[in-house]
Length: 447
Image: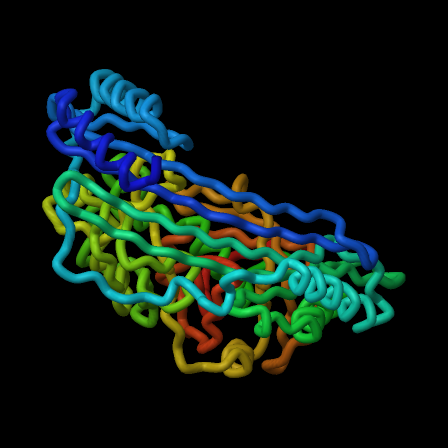
């Protein structure tokens, strides 16, 4: 039984079994992952997946179920499981099956150049990357990882209100993690690329980025505890924004898990801060023309020059708050219920170069790496205390690498203390991006 036949029969049987409206979400994909070590393929994983979820209203309660098999037995299972799920639901929140929008934006999520990608050529790229990394410097003593991966998926939403949406995406990534060492110790770095064609995977460039990052950390030392002028490097700022991204969730706010609840229209950040959620970004890791409820997505400024405009909403949370959905109703997987999450979230870049930022602080610390984010950050209160690495700045230039320090502060205070924003916006293999920023009010604990 093909998908369309399965869907039509499922809807027919569900409506005959007391469902007033229903929907299916389906996803099928494939992935290739290749790791190399010492000139040989260490791991080669090829996987394909398919899944379908069903949800429907019965007695004004929403029930959920899912399957990986398309046959008549699966149809009966889906209907019975969803009906049982609805009967067991104790939630009084109103849920919705969406009829769709008149218009959906076009967004580039699929590269035809990656169709029918040749695994042999992927292996060649990975082996070349390993070789280029090892020969880049005689200080390279090992590689923690050298990998190239491809993933693609097709997904869609159909419901009994006439909605029929499909989209597809694909992605190629490659990275290397070199370890360099001498008498002072060992350090690692990361070189990576997110590509829309195999030609964009440049082993020499990726190797250079990874090894140079590792070499720059050599000879690091701690500094005295105190308050310093601080540049939060773009990748470190991304770590902060990723960790606290849920504070912009309308669902988290309604559950009392975000201090941004009820703050719409208020200044929550410095006036140089604009934070955007853009699902229509070409090539973004979370770009999509519609969310997983079938709502047309659109770019929106969550924070404009420091003022909170809106939180992120799906249909349910928007209805509870009496506002329109922001098109951020997404699933963690086909088997999950719809939640609220960001798409491509980023702090808008400014005009200053990184060199300008260093000149501006003249003397201080660049924070480049943060560790312990899962245990050292409280998403509700915003407080964090994190192990950090970076560089000391003197006379507006990098002086020496820094390690064995801890940086502490509060996320909400940090947003308000951003003084300057760089132009080096970066999405480091993430759907969250940021430029480097100068911040006040963070304390550093060192030696």
